[in-house]
Image (cartoon, rainbow, N blue to C red; front, side, top):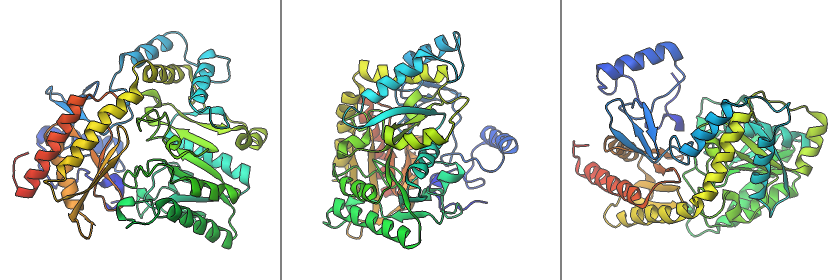
Length: 451
């Protein structure tokens, strides 16, 4: 069996560890028999979900769970604008990019209009974020003539063969490539007064030098601009500049992985990299782009794409299909029409401030940080040493699940609560998350059996 130390196994269901009841057990056995051993289920007591509605997921008995983990449906589950766009398009035409079609062009125009301060000039579409990062790496190799990749030490960028080699959060059993160098994630909580930007830039420069020392030309520095898998590390804003300058001086590209922080999640801009005042060579996107419809892609500068376009024919049967483009276009229009970036700031601030206030009575809360609809809560066994408390984190996640609030955990110590609600989370629903967390921490401290 695969090691349980990788982030995909945090808070996972472990067969035989808990009594899940005969109905759930039978469903799990059927699933295992049909899908094989590689899939994982979340929570000690796995959930069966039959319906989604806004921020809610609903089980067969009609119990509603507040979903503050799933940013795939960033507009909320089954948003009517997106479902209507999908239905209308699939009834009209579903085809690929080898035919002229205006929807993909309008989508490209709207996406490129979100980054007017950059030289980003072209859109290429895929089906998943993993594919987008794989394509970005291919482009970087052609543009630079190198293969070296620099990522943070608990990063996740995807599951293709090439990308899994620079996704260390997949665990020790998924080998990193010899062309990959890890740098410490910019953990301000553990930086002890150091200048985060200077330190991160020095670490990237050291990784570049080590690649070159081994005869490997750097191709790219790729980071999730909120460092999500590393523990949600949003600030301070601007600290990425030195590292980006370092990779570009070395002839490599800067790839901003916006699969998780993109599409307004920070409550400040459409993209997470914009808060750092940097200019990427490539921006990759995925998950929330189609609100559940499989669509992803990248924006790239003309310079990055020129040689790749001359040497490589790119075609993806489903990447850029008319139905997915209609869904993605509906997402962009809805974000603008409903003012969801501003809303993410307002409701996210209530969520962040409310959870930060809990630290006054819960010693286990070492740090609370976030931006917009993205909050990380670092749980520690001791505030002085800041030692991670993985066991408590798992317990809190499962207590929250039993209270009807769904979240997960991340970071190297498996001790950061990952709160990532749909952009449409209301202020009242933010209060529900805060209350459930308060109760869960209290019950965990007192050893209450009640969940």
